[in-house]
Length: 173
Image (tube, rainbow, N blue to C red; front, side, top):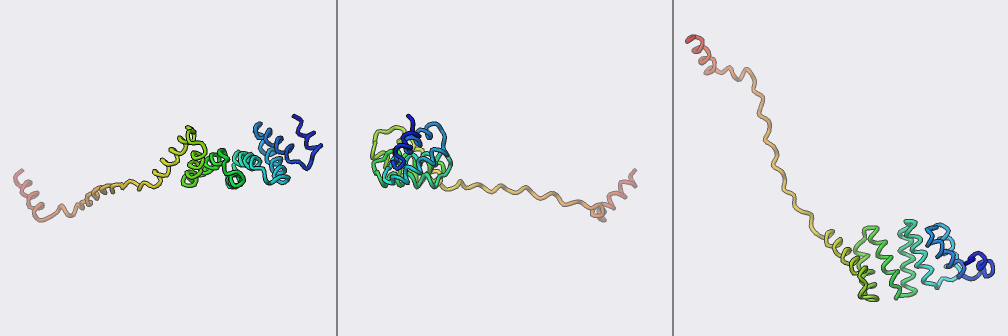
């Protein structure tokens, strides 16, 4: 498809920009995709698919707050947008915000209850939440090693008893 020609013929239509942006996204050309999806949204801010695709693009560019906002807008414009719930949950998981991911995965399961991938991801998220809420194991305080023996001074060996024993030994010899 010649998207440039479509844009040239209908520059005020979001369709050419959206389609070109979608194609660029599929080809991992994230910066051009972002520019085209921005233009598509500028021309038609009511297209939830444009926000969803821009969210994917933002995610690949590691612009996580922007991706969350785009997925949120896609959901607001189409509350039945299963993929937007799943992808927003993915962003939250990437950011280790498991408590925020759980409601999105539960919403996705309400829309498609038999989705095995979402069921698995929800279980993963629940496990991560449980791990983070688990109290840290109590570590026993190791017994400190005994202090080193006090240094023995040579003078302390010269007690009257030791001197007497030493003299007696010498006398016997």
